[in-house]
Image 1 (tube, rainbow, N blue to C red):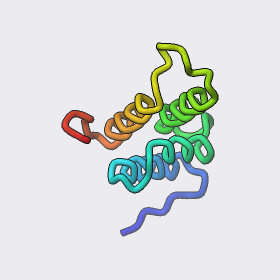
Image 2: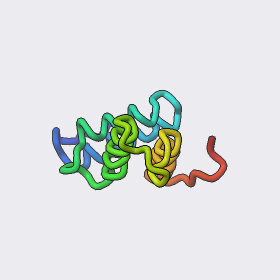
Image 3: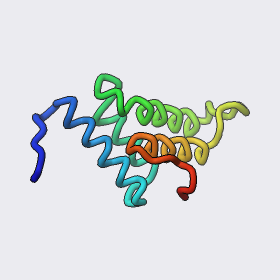
Image 4: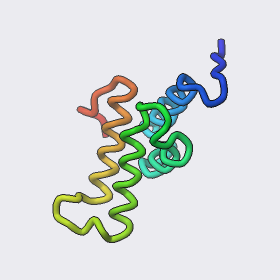
Length: 99
């Protein structure tokens, strides 16, 4: 049975975030694909489940812009690892023992 979510509903947004997190963990999208999607379609005003992904998109942008050159800002790989860890957390898995 399919569940119908009213367009723009919080429940629909939450399910969409979980689906995208599963796609990331299935390696059908990249960490940057997930954060870009969350930033564009969920935004800060959407479900709190997406907040970490939206924030990590901003971290990607900072690193891409060259402003992330400070030692404490991390690398693109660090941000990608954070995205994957958040996806695991979101769908109820631990990042331990996963790729």
